[in-house]
Length: 447
Image (cartoon, rainbow, N blue to C red; front, side):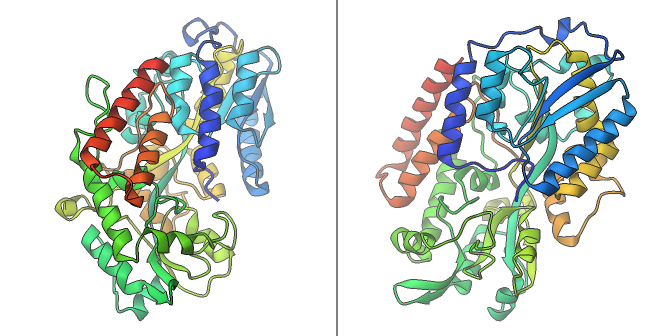
């Protein structure tokens, strides 16, 4: 399953954001600039993370063991399977039960983490350690790990999103290569679709926004949108990228049989993280997904050849083919921790040490989060995995920027996209304008 940035359901994301809202006035702490503990003195740190699968937990423990060997004065007590809700409750309470170091899958929460003061600003630590973050991390990753100059988190492994496809089905349909442009994508999706009465034997792709990773944000990245203007206001109505994406997606839905028919077929799909995933079962020929999908499909025992490629781009942006949406896990230090200098040693090791990053990426099959790790000869790279490494490196790949409302602005946009694809938005331009005003209102309240 995706282990860098696990995509959450809308309900899960809303719950996490509600919990984060409570943090806005509850978190004040020592602050990085005033950390006074001796990082060379014997100490014990508490580190909370969200990984839970046995292989993931083992990989974390192995990385911690390497850290403790290099820093014999620091012991680390590790607690896994921690949700953002649990983390937020502990950070609000403070005291001995609160973690010193936290890793979160919810990159959308970074703006709230920074704005509320829940996490310490890491810029002073980076300067003291003479680490030039712009030379260590890809620019896109720095975008989602800071807010208004407050680098309250650092990247810890990456998820890149592309196209995973059934090469056997492609060959049977006479398709010799993955689509590079949206028009080719729509054409191939129709060729690969096999109707069956009022349903399907297989769809070329499930284009509706409830289709797992086929979210409005993943697709919008292919149009290189601007979410916010220089003054911080929403660009949703001003940037034509959003209207173009929504129009293209709705057109594809219509070409593949219409929203109602597709939704009835999708209702029978299995769990995204199980062997019953529709791509594994041959119910969809192309899947918008992350770097974890090929390995999961093989573990499910699929009987077809798997291919990977970047997502197609709009026809008028063909030169940018190769870009995609990027997110990932973040790591930060509690602003209330009294061991921030020692905690920084752990964060620095896990996020910037090339051997540590590569070992972790190899163990849990995620994209590394530093430029050096991406180019490391020790990184295990299959042809399928290389697709996602290249997406992560692509200069036009993008992410959703951090904002003080966490990811609420994304959920607002997503809810609008749900209505638009159903045909419940008679005036797309007016609807985008209203949604932009709602986003501006929510962010103003959060700040």
